[in-house]
Picture 1 (spheres, protein in one colour):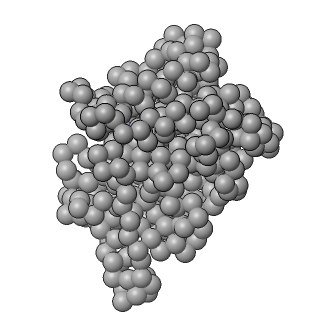
Picture 2 (cartoon, rainbow, N blue to C red):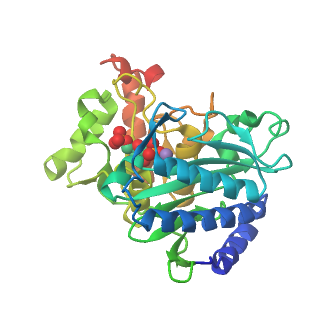
Length: 348
Ligand code: AHG
Ligand code: MN
Ligand code: MN
C-alpha cells in the first residue's frame, strides 16, 4: 500500500497559516509520522505468525515497564520516520535518554510510540502520541535540553489511534482536526474539523480499582459522580476506562467528560502513572485546542517545566468546567488536614 498524504498535507498547510510562527515547519514531520502510523496500523492488523505482538521481550523501558514486541516495532518505525524527516532532539518512552537524530534538526519530537500496551493482548485500542517542540540552542549537543522546556513551547501535537479505524487527531495550534485512514487507498481523509470538548458530558474515566489509594479531592469528586441524581451534582454520570489513554482522550472530543490519572498512595504512584513530556503535554495541547483544560490537580499542565525527561505527572483533563470542579477540590484540600501521603500537595 502506498500512502497518499495530499489531503492531510492540504489541511495542515491551511492550519499552519492560521497558527503562524513555526507551525509550518512541523508539517513534513507529521506527514512522515502519518506514513509510519499507516505502516504500523497494517502491521498491527496482520495476525502475527505466533500471536506474539503482545509478548514480552525480556527488557524494560525507561520507567521500568516490561517491553512488548509491538513497543519495539513501534519505536523502530517512529524513530525512523523522525530521523528521515529531520527531527533533531528525540525522546521516546522506549529510549533510555534523549537522542539527537538529525544533527541539523530544528524541531524536537517527544513520543509514546505505543500507548495502551496492555490492550495489545486483548485486541483493544492502542495508539501513538507525539509532540513537536523547537530545538533550543545547545539541544543538538545535549538533546535533553529540548525536553526541559515548559509545555507551552509545544508547537504541534497529536495522536494516532489504532482501533476499528485508524484515526489521527492533530493540532498545529489552530484548532483540532481528526482524520481517518482509508486502508484501501492509504489516504488520511478529513473526518472532522474544529473538534471540541463539549460541556455537559457527564462522563468520567478513571481506573476505579485504585479508589482506596486516592487522595481526598479525587475521592470526593468521584463519590459525588457516583451518587448521581441523588447526590450533590443532581445528575447521573457514566463511567468508561479503556486502559489506553488514546481511546479515553478521543472520547472527550465530541462527548465531553473528564479523564483522570491522579497521584495515589501506591508506592511509585505519588506522581501518577503518565509521563509529562510525551503523554501529558501532547494531550493537554490537544484538549486546550479543543476548548477543554488540563491540570495536574493544581496547575495548568502546559505551564509546567519538566525536571527530567521521563518525569511522571498526575493528569486531569477534559471539559473546562469539570476540570475547574476538580481544581477547586484540590485547592480546598490544601487547607484541610492531611488524610495521607497522597493528599498533600507535595506528593500530588
Ligand atoms: P503505555 O502503554 O504507553 O505504558 O501507557 C498506558 C497508560 C495509558 O494509556 C492508560 O491510560 C494507563 O496507562 C492505564 O493504566 P492502568 O493500567 O493503571 O489503568
Ligand atoms: Mn502511554
Ligand atoms: Mn507506550
